[in-house]
Amino acid sequence: MTTAGVSLTAAREIVESLVPSAHAQAATGAFKTVEGTGAECFAEQLIASGVKYVFGNSASEDAHFYEALVDRPQLKYILTPHEGPGAAMAAGYVKASGEPTIVMQAAVVGLVNAMGQMFNAYKEQTPLVFYSYRTDQSGRAGRDGFEEVANQEQIVQPMTKYAWLARRPDMIPETVRRAFKAAWTPPYGPTYASWHSDFNDEHVRAEVIAHEKLDPRMRVRPNPAEVERAAKLLVEARMPVMIVGDEVRNAKAIGKAVKLAELLGMPVTQARQCYVNFPETHALWVGSPPAARLTSLDYPKNPDVVLNVGNKLQHNSVVPMVGREAKFIDMRIDAAAIGNIIPVDVPLVADAAYGLDDLTAAVAQLMTSALKQKAAARAEEARRFHARAKGLRDLVMQNPDWDRAPMLADRVTREVAKFADKDAIIVHEAGSVALHGFDFNPEGGRDLFFYYGAHLGSGVGTAAGVKLARPNRQVICLVGDGSFIFGPTALWNMARLELPVITVVYNNHAYSGPHSRVIEKVPGGRMVQTGQFFHDYLGNPDMNMALIAKGFGVEAEVVQAPEDLAAALERARKATVEGKPYLIDAQVARVGVAWADKPWTPPIRIAQERTRKV
Figure: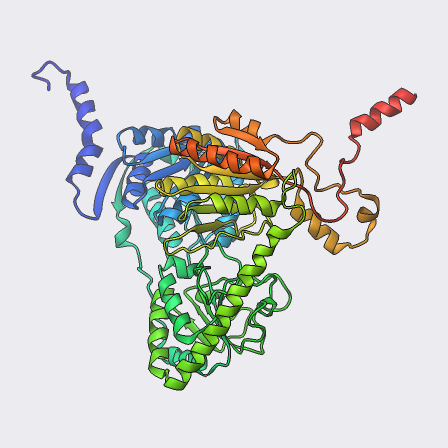
């Protein structure tokens, strides 16, 4: 270069700038050494960890990371206007794709905005990795600087499997890959990585390692002796029942659960989880328990053996979900949860797919002609209940207010169920709205993504992430008005990324769930007597969700009557075929007890009235 007329100093600078690329190109296999800024090492480790999409909100101290993205097109950055819906979008992508991603926020101020969705990921066991730098630089930490908080990584510890602060810039890749390893080792869950902001800028040399070299591949087979005990209990049972959970879906074992249920003629149910983990169209499906107790099922009333396969069994009562009157077999990879609350007769710590394989084989060996006849009789009884229950659910259409406007929530649901594609994905954050009529079947039919963590504002973002992962499936987001206003900014991402999601808002201008639960706690109390409910009315003025959507670049309309809803859904279909998202603000009637039409008098009006009198 000097013979070509380039000065010696300039030549050295050019060569030094090429060193990181040279190291990266020279590396082969699952290991490579990278020289560059800490942020460049961060980007390289994300690529090695299998990340394709980075979900983030703008953060100035990540400047060198954004710089690194310019020459790394395989890392696609999705800018989200708010950290909460952005994290929900990332979670939806992970759930629908089964691929890793990362959520980035600015320091602790961005982190706290995302923590609601971190809580959801913790409750739902979603393997989502979070990162935010510490705005205090390593040379001045502890001086109460701008956006500084002591022990930032400890804030999230109760809601994460792993939370760590890299001690040196060359430890950034190690911290990142440990975060991915912990998140994606069953039982799944969120993790958090952090470091001082100046580490992003420092020039370092670090080793980057592919995720495959760290993954423990935790596919565990159950204890054979316990499998034999479980099989014996099941074949001797008068009325066994199987509870399925999200571990079944995560292990791609829904078909295996069906096989075991059919072998025993065993009714199947599911306590609250994120997904549908058994075909609702199957004759052995008997619905979900409406309360915290398994005995709340309409059928069967008194199971003598209960088999749980991969369900978290969220306990919302002082009384355990499975009582001591039944023998309990608990099959989960989440060994730490087994036996915490419900006494276990047979513990099976296992990957759901391997566990179901082994248990099915053990049961099959014990099945005699008499036991097969017994199983067939049980299956016929379950089939009759399944058919009768479906007929009873259809009675909702005989409601005398079925055609009213504003609409019944049940009418909105039925119209959407009638409209949805046979393999549509439904993202549900519509509170206590019952999803009847969909006949979910994750084995090639309609699928469901349910908000389980209970932090509101996840629905719209989750739907955007699901559509990003499943571009060829129809995605419909059902969301309550109260939940919608927690996270509408993801609509902008739908418009920008051309993610044609149909969003239906159940808009009754109120928080219906809190209203009903308060009345249950204080029946006949002063609130009911006076009609003064301070906590649930969202009208006066009414929120126009269609105008909010249009402000984010999404086509939308307000719908009052059922016949108009059917037409609006067809317009939504046309828009999505053209690659455009669409929102329907469905006006829903408030039903129940003692609704107030006005909130309490605004303080400013009281003050003005006092002034007028004076």
